[in-house]
Length: 170
Figure 1: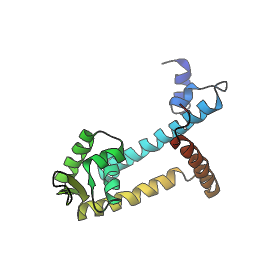
Figure 2: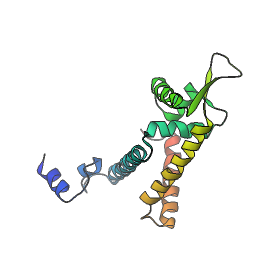
Figure 3: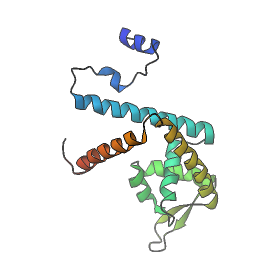
Figure 4: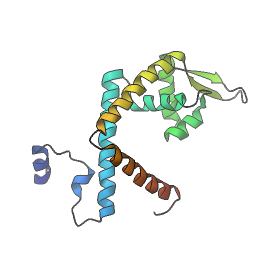
C-alpha cells in the first residue's frame, strides 16, 4: 500500500475517490468526487443497516419502494426502468420476494400477456417498517447539517439536476 494511503488509514480517514485529488485539480472535479464519496458512504451505511436490521438488501428495498408508490402494480419492464437495472435483476429480486409472500404477480387487465407486480398486505406492512427506519437513518446521517444548510444544498443540487436533465455538458 502506498505510504500516503497507509498514513490516511492510520489517522482513520476513509480511502475513497476523493483522496486522489489535490488542490490543483479543478474545483468541479473535487466537488464531483466529494459528492460521490458522500453518496457512497451513505449508501454503504444504508446497505449495512438494511442487512443487520431487516436481513434484506438495498435492491429489494428499492423494488418494494417502487411498488409502494404504485398501488396498481408495475410491469416488470417498468420496474426495470425505474430501478435502472436489467430485467433479469428485477426478475430475480421479484422471485425472492414472491416466495416470501411480499409481492404477487397478477395478470394485467388490459394485456393478458403482461404481469403486474404488487405488494401484498404483508409486503406493505414490512415495507412501512423498513421505510420508517430508513428515514430515521437518513435523518441521523444528515443530522450535522442545519435545516437552512439542507434546504440550501437541496436548492443548489436541484439546479444542477435540472441542468444535467437538459442534456447540457458531456
